[in-house]
Length: 139
Image (cartoon, rainbow, N blue to C red; front, side, top):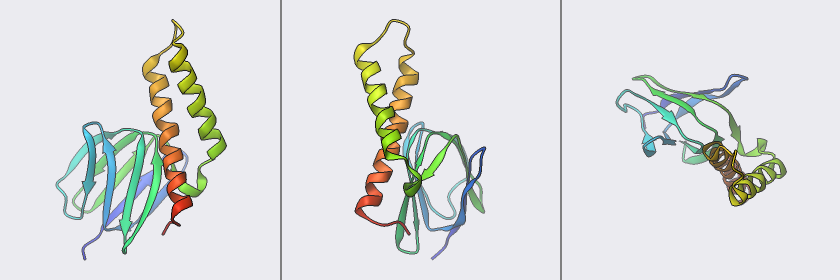
């Protein structure tokens, strides 16, 4: 089976750099799957789960946004932040979720609703990835 190189990089570190069978991410237009020999493209990424399939296994990472570039020989993700399931601080993510939900409920007049909704999406992605790990170990 054909594979493609996946490199995930944040400003702080290289998160992932290996051959994979498929990558599933959330772009600005919705969820997309990238297979080997995919057409070249570049798009922005939304906060959410990033699924990596390789060797019959699956690994989920939480990504807070960034850019995806698909080249003929590799997939490059430049992420704002990216965490593997075992790196997620569940208490911190739950606290962020509660703060965002409370702010959206109260709707203070000076609130930037878009920023609060983005914070909520980021915390939900982290919690979902962490929950998946509880149910099934990573690769």
